[in-house]
Length: 450
Image (cartoon, rainbow, N blue to C red; front, side):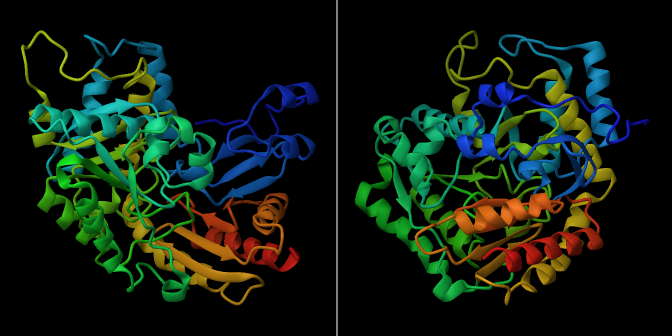
């Protein structure tokens, strides 16, 4: 596959007027317009910046480009699909690729997940899963189960459903007047006094799942539809579940007839060393939400995988009537499904899940080498994800981490910051030397930032 050189297709770049025209998501827009940092090309493990520098991508785009950028098999699959079919309506008709991808996903995932409902993003996948949970209980004659239980520090996208069950304070505060009623939250599992500098799953904290039992007693199980958690809380800064914690949540939900939803938008498709986190953590939920890595970030696609009994319960009433009043114009878009099928083939044929498992201890050793770097108060990791928590600068929280992010980008590495946490999640195609380079650039930034 012939590809242009990094400088070949460059244009003049956005004007000041262009920069003003775009309202960027989750961005300090006024600051960005004064200090723009943009990329113009991506390939493999690298971006190319607007000024022609190579930027080592330490976050797989935004936890999504798990097979690297512009993987030739995925790119070619999208091109071929565009030559055949650009769009097909998903209501009352559909196209072959949607069925093929659904079948490939359910066969690959197994464990009773026999149906998939396609959406376009993690946010839509979460809202879909919440609606499925309500529909399931109503179909079984338990329509009084309306309540959802999320978790503090949880991130489930930006739909009103996802924000309601999410536990990001800023997100909830901004839209508090329009959130779903009756939602409650488990405490998070982030406790530096007992967990600081854990490698993999912390050994302390399984008992925190017992808070769910208290919430059940408070509200009564007959009002609770589902519990939704991220197996690993990615957006909050790689908060890894304690040993035994998820198992305890599963047991409590099963006993009380409550559905357990795993939000695997970040943890899916190799990030934790298996196709999904539940594969490596050995806890099977009732519903899985996915997005991001399903197409390796090439085309937006998300969805919800459901256990067979959930789907069967919803298939009631006369056959000529719609069973589930939900869907999107672009549910299972032909280009997205083509990308998804190609991405699954790449993960399988190139052994990327096995590669992720092999690289995980390399990343772990590298990231924990920063333990004595300035301002570091915690390091945590699991699979191909890691985070470094920094002591906030007095009177200026988040600024220190922001400056580390800027320093890294300006010196050839892309990481992510949230609050005073630096997060990294390299693509599964990374080499050991690239992981070492990435951690070295973070180390330099930590020592340069006051």
